[in-house]
Image: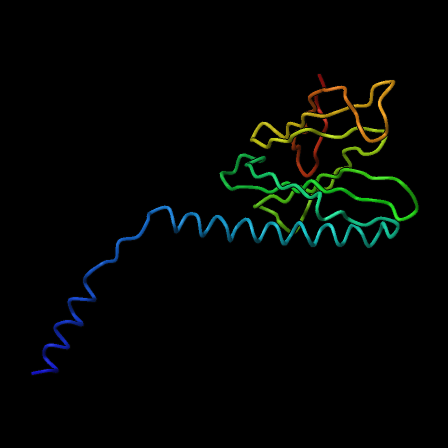
Length: 166
C-alpha cells in the first residue's frame, strides 16, 4: 500500500510544473553571455599590456558599456579602460570592443587621455559608439578638460572608424 501511495505521489509530482519567472532564463543566459565577453575583454587587455610594458591598467576606472554595435541581435561589450604610465604622470583611455560574434578578435582603439581628450559618457547602439567627449580648452588644467563635443565611432568590417565630430 505504501508503495502505491509513493508511486502515485511520484507521478503527481512529475506532472506538476513549478512556477518560474519567465525572465529568469533570459537573464541567466544574458549574464553568462556578458561574463564570457568580459573575460574576453580581460584577456585582450592583458595581451595588449604585454606589448606596452611601461603601462598598467587602473582597474577601478574600468567602465563597461553593453549594446548591439554590429546589429546582429546579440549584445556586444565595450570595455573603456584607463592605462597609466609607470614612467610618469600620464594616463590614457582606450576602447576594447568585444563583439558577441567574434569574442576572440577584440578591436582596441586609443581614444584619448591626458592632454588629448577624456569622456563624460559612452553609449553603444547599432548606429555606433557615441561618446560625449571632453576636450582641453586653452586654460584647462591637465586633469580637467571642459570643452564638450560628440564623437561617433562606426564599426566598418573589423575596425572602429571615428566618423563624425560635432
